[in-house]
Image (cartoon, rainbow, N blue to C red; front, side, top):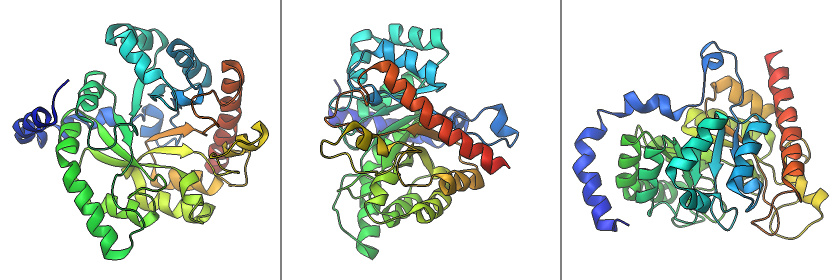
Length: 320
């Protein structure tokens, strides 16, 4: 495995080429197809492997086909184990399995690595033509105003060798607004957008964490508009009754779209208004982590399909 020094040296050697490549690679970073080009808004679904806990990768890929998701997002432990299973399979077997099913690897989620240990993952994502890596925004928490802006700028500066390498590889590092994180509040997301380089950096928007700050549907919709396509993944995920303590399964499932109190209609309308061309993941966390959201793969797929029907109905309503 390359050392931190080797990664930074390699990145600096490639820096002169970075500015020449992103425009030719931008097509890799959007899932939109012909229908989007014609102005027919749709949600582009990606399946988060952690919804199936540590079930085998073969099962998850089959489920992506069954749910109608053209893309898959691989999570590592403790939430899943499919990222580790990719290493066990090897790239040739994995790529063949994707091709057989007509799927694409859309994202590697790496909270475990954090934003400053992504060198090898960026290289892997580029090799697999995977357009996204999602991680958290490491830095001080609880800041506001100019202190927050300065901290976000420092974070982006520190991340620059990685965003440069990501941009060269056709990859976007998307920072989720995770709790207890530098990038948590609406202001932190908007500063991230304003100060970000042209390529290589985006965000991943999780309503769940914003609801904990008191944001309702209309405020969330406005934030979606403000972020536009700087947001690369929308997690269709609400707070419900939370995901940090053991609840009944019925209560846990309130995180899923169409079950809890959050009305996703204004959020879908906002995505339509800005021509959102990123990905949507139907999402929740079980307790404990690392188990499927329901006892079997079949039941998990059924719940994802139920949530998808809810979201698709909102899209249809917005078209009217």
